[in-house]
Image 1: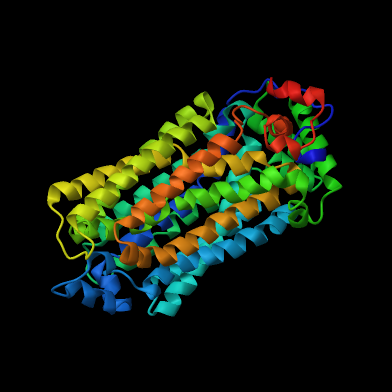
Image 2: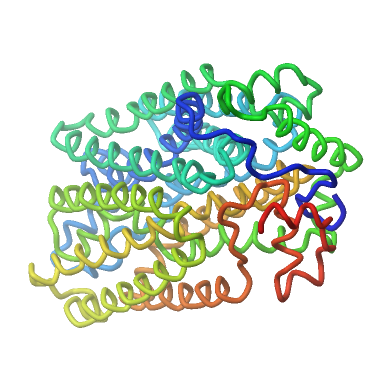
Length: 511
């Protein structure tokens, strides 16, 4: 395992004769359902903060600004306490994702997903019953623990379970379920907004439904063969692999390759977080930090959270803004389906590049429309045709994100790490994702108030930077077995100086 690669001496082949079985589809769908809770929360937060009954009970100052005769459209929702309601979840998730690495090695990925579902269920109950801001934030922190655990375990579970040839499609299932959760949340908000006084409680309380789905799903699936081998459960690992690969697969050969990788990793069993800082893991660490950080710097997460607020700023009424969020959620789901169908056909890099170019154009166009219609002072009213144009551009932006940076942020970290640092590496990736989300959700409304329409130029510039990064530093990993990934890094023009060349038989796995 020298050089931080996945290549294992004596590995047989990346194709063990198995195909897509009913069992592997069901197992991966159950694991991917972990994305439901993250998607539901992303959708529900922005809609609830746009409901007058919720604002009246907890944030009356925002309502007073909305009622002002003359107001800066960009600054109506600028409240640090309001954004703390949204962002507190991600601070808790960051802590949980780092703790989940040690917990995963001790009890397995399946148990961590169960714990995540339980935390999320508890948070939904506390938020639905909240009578003050303190209860809201405690509930959000419980939700954060659930998301931190689930986001750490589910993508790696999918990468370790799916056949190498279709790993990208199965791993993007996490983003697909995230889209389903987001759409369900936006539909819930649209209906709950019509219920006076307690509609927001319904929206927050129904988070228990996706939590129940992940709890039941995690109970019905086995742990991954790799995770079982790490804990010395060889026969359970063999049974789990036979279940997901089917009777025609050479289960013994694949299990032998996985066991070699696990045995090689045992020498590095302790101190994974220190080890990942070493030179031989430099490519993995850089990608673990850069990919989730860049995903957040597209600006999509704040658009998803605050889309009702954004659409109200653009001239929609309260109900129209919630309906716009529903449309946006449907677009996200459709683009996730597109990604599932294309990621293993065209590869990771082409989807990143196409998505980046479209996102830049959409953000520049939104900035131009809002700058010309609302103006710098934010006191002008946008004509309806321009409001619809903002909605259309936001949908195109979300679609391009949905086939590129959305799903691939879960695919890339889940497949690049050697087994000895896989849990730690995924924890780093999820922690960066949630930490960046915390900072952006805490600052977006203030940024919108200060930068005005230039907020979207700021994010467009970051998309340009990350697209250039992909061109220069991200190798193509389509169809490469996890055990042979080291050869990909060794061949790269830049990362090859950090990673030792793998054995020749490992090179054969990707040829």
